Image (cartoon, rainbow, N blue to C red; front, top):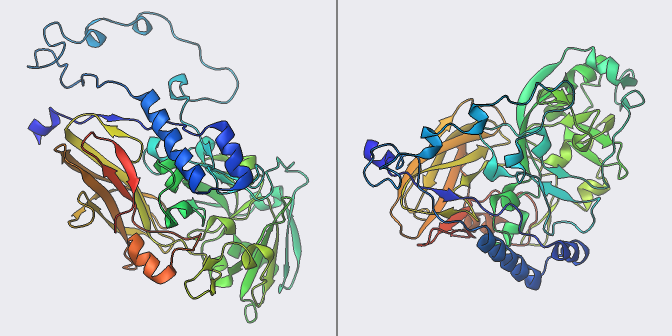
Length: 461
């Protein structure tokens, strides 16, 4: 291992943005067809060429006296000569304001949807998974999905009503809720349409666009079970709850009572601060393990009932078209899934050597038990290291060491959760679901690395 570390591999980042504004407008207005898919690929290739950089000598090779180091005779001037920031005063402590990332990280942004929706108000943005570490998503990089835009609602006028099959219908202010016993839990949030474009042929090149409608945060709020008990819900007749948001679409979702009583929260906090407006401020539902549309934002009403409501958001959207023509409805649970985030699509391996393959795994049914990684398209697998903490219905980071010899390879990851469920290949999933589905694609993702080191989005069977 010591000899390998002296020759580490180097990865060039993927272009952070490759979408032409005019092309993006056309996709939003007219949808994503074969012609525009070709334009997407061409735009990405042009962006890749523009961002290409020559390989620079690694710090290991620049060690003073190391044979073969480019600057081995004189040593690395970046170590030997003190820079100006080491010999001058820095900026003072900020007296007010909200802290910002380094100006050198200005390209790490949420990015707009390349074709999932047709209006800016009913659209999505994608988390830059390739640029994140650990499991927590910063609030400013959390993905967004709206049905009629977002609002910054005054907290003093916002109300939550609980009614239906309860002894006492009640209305809560935000202050009322924040006086109740609260809990903080880390959970992933994934849109049911995440990876939707991968049902067909790969259309987008990077992990930000294939899997970026995924985030993981610490949420703080009061358990919904506490509120239902407080209102005296009917334990004999109650089978479902209906959650409704205060946005322009009045988005509503049915949730089985067993989920509502298990780990669902009425949340106001996210990563130690109040929810942001685009994430549901001042109140949202946190429904661990369930698809993102069930995490109703700007929560204003919860109704307890004895049957599903079959609202527009669950009758004509978020349903899967099966091969026999039937609709797969109320499939809320996000099944076990994983993805390699580095090396991943759009990046380039600049030289042979040792690389750290890293990625994320998650399951809506509990904890991740195991992640296997393949570098030969699924013929052979090795177990990756699961980095703690491994939590219930949360992202889990995995890592594995790998030495690239310069040959063409296909990288894959395959997760297993604590129920024993094994993440399927795209071929296995299509045999059951067909190719016309839109939602709940949890198939194994394949990244092909060609002999030049380019990492491409492919589908391997």
